[in-house]
Image (cartoon, rainbow, N blue to C red):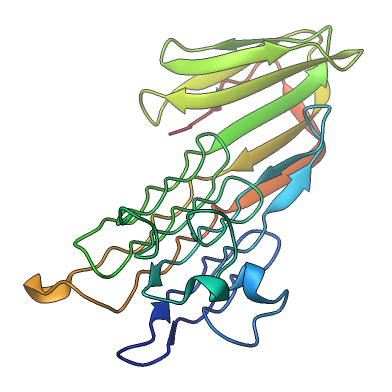
Length: 238
């Protein structure tokens, strides 16, 4: 789940809550945040997976936005933006930067990271969620063949394995088939696209409440799954 927003009063400022990540909830936008001021309004961290050979985080939450908060209250970088969670979460917009950064940062592509929330002093848009990814790890004597609308890449960096990453498909009916012995075992990870951050400027009025961060994408991980070379499997990535 996402963290709660926090309003300090008309002349003091407000935070939007951070979006939840796959590994932890989003952080509240106010005092008492676990981790201290550095995490106020920050997105929750995603989870790390090693299917590709290296530890990589996916599905981090987007950071909430900041509206006229004293700079010392959000020491998260020179531009005072809330942090996105590990795993591609985008930073939130802020009124504290000069010039103002109204729009939340997009989640990182192919991570399922959530978008950052929009700052509330302007008609800003929340950041878009990062696209998802499908990773399939199989013995190196198995070759995958994808239909024409699939954007994929192959890594052989892990000895004895072919590791395919699917980052986009042109339709929801694209397929993958495998050439090898009739059956084999494979590991695969599916990460959905992250949620967009909230925008601001409701009813034609510029102002708070500040936008919260988007949540990280859902995921499914499978190990040693039996696959058939006689089957065509649906694979979808946006």
